[in-house]
Length: 309
Image (tube, rainbow, N blue to C red; front, top):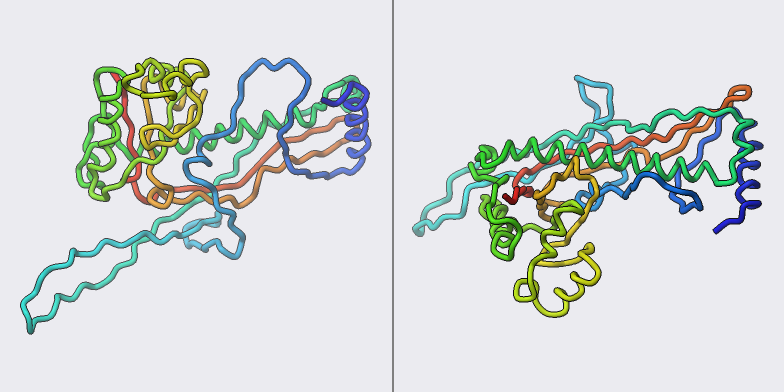
């Protein structure tokens, strides 16, 4: 860890650099020697739908908006193959390519302000503290947008989804989290017309402790012992990659989201990575973080949710 003198030197350099009226830098994570009051974590949205970098030349113009847009092709449906007698020809099928639109949003942190003379009194690297927290707060905003979209696509609990063969993708399963109910949850997605399998499970850090109650005969072998000793970590289990989050407002207790392979869900694009802007005006300095990204769910069949009751 940096010494007190080294941290003071870092802040002195910041004070000197602020002579430039417009300075931008990349926001970075850091571990600092100070007392934290709030637990923050990296986002889960990028683990479920990894973002793809996109440039200006890859954007598509639209007649109804000046905002950046990307048009993505969607796999078209086609009639099944059939058997024909000899001497006959198949019917003609005219091809229509399906597409969907990905819009972009700018996510920003609050605009922080401080008297530059007060910066002289800090012994921690306040730049890294604020950039670390601001970036994770923006990742939380990404997560909230993903969960809102997922819930909207699945309509509601125990409700058939008309755009996916009238199957229920959001089910209530009674009996808590057991080996049997977990396997029943994994049946939700394959029932759809796309025959997809769940690859990723998203659950909060309180609900996962219910899964830890499964006995030796349910988990099996050394894994049961390791879970009892060390708790559940992100790992492969029941043919799922588990993501555990502290964001209980987004992923409620006794709820588990499941996602198929990203190529069966949609697209997420990163137009501008997280950046910190700083500017000094007289004796006041202000700074904030921002990024521009977009995403859309192009196929709702790659999603599932279960509420354990």
